[in-house]
Structure formats: structure tokens, C-alpha cells
Figure 1 (tube, one colour):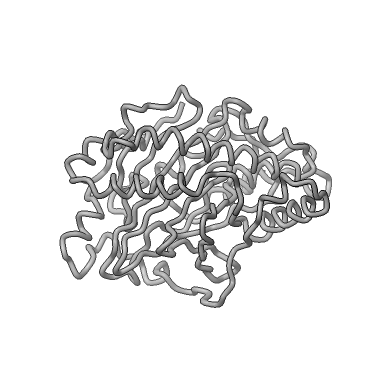
Figure 2 (cartoon, helix red, strand yellow):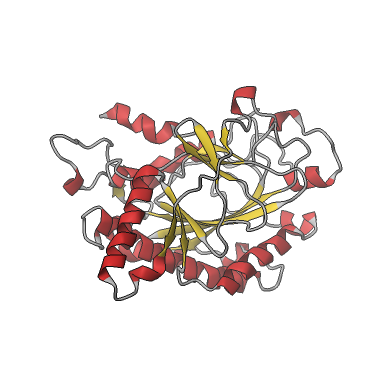
Length: 357
């Protein structure tokens, strides 16, 4: 099991409370160094690829092959794509956002009952990493385990709003079902057969965690970030974005591309474990979140991860004399200690593994 620090190094301040206080200047420990502030943004009409999944269930084999090829290109070139016609009810997607927004609108004392600590991160939180004096991100969140079922702790899920616990079950079921379909598709595209990646993730024992991000409005959005640049440490992420307020930015070369969410779409991105399993054919790409001066923003990230104690290493079929294994075998538990201790550090962690060849 993971060994983590049990308590935060400093008293926790809720970012939402700061935003509601009427302050006009943000506290110093949220101000990023000049080189790490929002900049180098590609303001053109470029967007991450949008994939229509309807073709994957139809009879047109040519259209299916074209769609699989579009997904393959997106994984290799962007590490990100959006999916529409994915089979998840649009009404459920809206209800998920609305219910969690309602939770963050509860009085502070209600939310504080679910305060988390760095040993598991489960519950209501406002920081990642335990380094004293760290520059923090302008966001609060709620983190919980959904799969495997043995790790679920419904008593730690919000009791208010009253529909929240049932919503977590319903949304979790549909989101993880979609994740399973996507992972099979990614496996097929690597030439490994559709069962290789699902089995590498642990089959029935796959892991899934939900992190609901709340980005309060910010009086100085040009000085801070909602989430610092990072690649996701897990397998694959399914993000339900805020449809009204853009904020997610994806690194493309030296620029940051602001993702423009398509109505009723999910955003899918590769995690570091997918980069390892594919021997870097699929890329886990750095991304960050900017904040808004007038509007709060909410998003739901379902992290679909390998079983925590399974060894993850490049698929043997993808290792050749010309392309040797780029990464050593390591469990996801060992891997994520880094991010839970150090916080978000770009792609420093997955890139550092290459030095251990």
C-alpha cells in the first residue's frame, strides 16, 4: 500500500471562501512566478479533435475504420480528443454538473464535514502535495473512489444535496462503462487486440476515481492557475467539462490551446500509465486550467486507472530492437506517491523514468 503523509503542512483555506470574501487581490501563495502564469496561448480557431462514436456501433465498416483511425491520430498527436454520441444520457451529464454545483454552494460548515487529508485525498480538498510553502492552485475539489467497489465509501460521499449519493452511483456506472469501451478501442488501435489494455488495467479489478473540480471566480486570473501544468498519472481520464466557461488548456508544441467544449461531449485524455503501456506511442500530454474573473467553473474528471498493485510496463508486442522498452516496470501505487507528495510538476515524473533504462 501507499505510504503518504497523514496531515497537511499548513492550515487549509478554501479558495471559494476567498473568492466570496470580496478581495480584489489574491494572497501571495496563489501567485505563480512570471514564467508560470497564463501565457503563450494559441488564440486561433484550433481545437482538439472531435470524434463521433456513433460510427463504431453501426454497420458501415469503412466508417468504423475511419473513426478508429481518427482516434489513433488524436492519441498520438494530441493525447486529447472529445467524443460525441457516446451513449451517456445528456440529461445525466447535466444533472451531474448541477448536483455537484449545488454541493459547492452548501454552507462551508456542511462541506467541512468531508474535509480530506493527504493520506488518501478522499473528500473535500483544496490542495495537492504536502510541501510547506508551496504555491497553490486557485481551486477546491472533491475526490472519491468508485472502482473497485470494495474501495467505495458512500458514507464519505456528500449527503447534501440529498440526490448526490445516488447521482454518484448512476454517473459512475455510465462513465466507467464508457471508459471501458474507449480502452478496448485504444487497445485495438495499438494492434494488441481489444482485450490487452483492459486486462493490463486489471480486468474486473480496474480502478476508477472521481475528482470534481470547482474553480471559483478570481479577481486576478492573469496571476494564477486553477490547476498547474501536469499530465495525469493514471491510465485515461474522462472529463465532463463546464459547458458555459472554457478553462482547460492543452500544450501543443510551445503553445497552450484552449479547449472549446462541444455541447454534450466528454473530453478524453491519455494518462502516464497509457504512455508507458503503449511504449510512448500514445502520449500523456501536459494540460492546465485557467480561471475566470466573473464566473465560477465546474468539471468532473473520472480517472480510469490500472489496479494499483499491478506492474505496468510497455506491452511486449510494442517493444522491438529499433524501439526498446522506454520505461521500467512499476506499480501505479508506486508511481502516484510522487504526485501526492510533490504536487503537480508538468511531465517531470513520466519523463524521469526514462533515465532509469
